[in-house]
Image 1 (tube, rainbow, N blue to C red):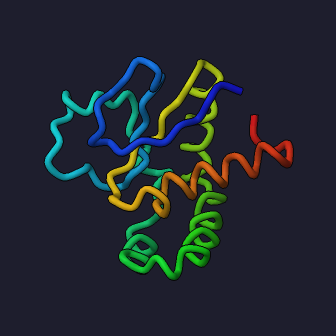
Image 2 (cartoon, rainbow, N blue to C red):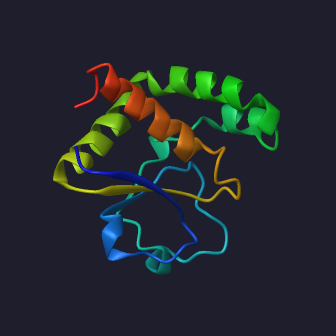
Length: 125
């Protein structure tokens, strides 16, 4: 499977990014759509507003966030977005874009770990 990378949306696009997919529910502040060079915006793969608000600014609750987000990713709407993401991965490298300042604990990190866990169990294509 081609590579899956993470990057803050505010970082400059590079050719090695491949398909650039924004995985946040909200458009990032202060960035123009043309400057961001986003190929696809998968709002439905992002955590729900309720989940995002419940854990915002609470790094100590990271594990609970990941578990709750994984449960949301199993839902029908999110699964359609996951399928779209998997199709893009078949075509080549994909970079998941996020706006959060915390580069270690954000929804893109949790999503990548979830996808890699699914692939490890033979469930991701």
